[in-house]
Length: 363
Image (tube, rainbow, N blue to C red; front, side):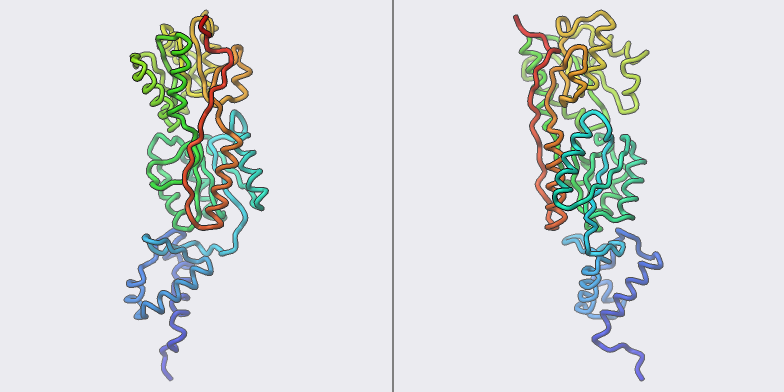
């Protein structure tokens, strides 16, 4: 009796070989499988047989095929959806984040999806841990606020692995340049930075300074708008009047030596653009403690229209972050991507001026 399998069973043998290679660790989740030509040569089966085997394994959720890229190990994920969307945010308990999360959760819940939350505290190693966790547990899609998005990200391969597994991802507030074709929902930070300069110039300010965050895209974009606004108005951008800080600096920015640096950098300014309302709040308190009057001597503009802008001793003129609307938007996009398998266009949302008390009014 011949030891060769029947012709019609060859695809099953190839499927069993691939499953065994996965179970014995020769292939890991997200790894690229050999091409159809390579599999055909390695096993002596026709391309048709190979294609049939791969098609069945794809239907079972063992493999995922990406046009123009190849076939990848999907970790045996079932084709049945988990109805769970992962969300990775830098923070979730304060500032604008609860409103963003609320909008996201409302839309996902209405569509029958559950939300699984992870918080990075803006640390790349925590982001890596969360990505590994979502890869292992299995989610239908992922919503991500990037970590230190102005810096090269060491977790790009994990995002590529998720893509190879067929898990769509939508970024909000920022995204990684190392991931071409990313789908994102962000605010128009450059335009808002430009408009902030117009507000201060329109109030009669002539010597502008700024405080910007160095390790995320929002800080860079708001600074770019600030620089453009000054340039187009014929003003001078003086580096000595711009303070840069990173995530690790924030707690000490208005204390000790850093506070002295802030005062020295901005004491000759009559208008300051701040990275966000939290920074504007801290600056106003620092200026008042050093005898400066806001807005009579120095006007201050923030971003996001967070609740802290109203708690400030001088209510902060700011630009409205869409918050809940952004949460709804990212949720709508990830649902469509999960259910259609097609990417969504990215969105840039406008920030509108909210006038309060921290900018002087021309008499």
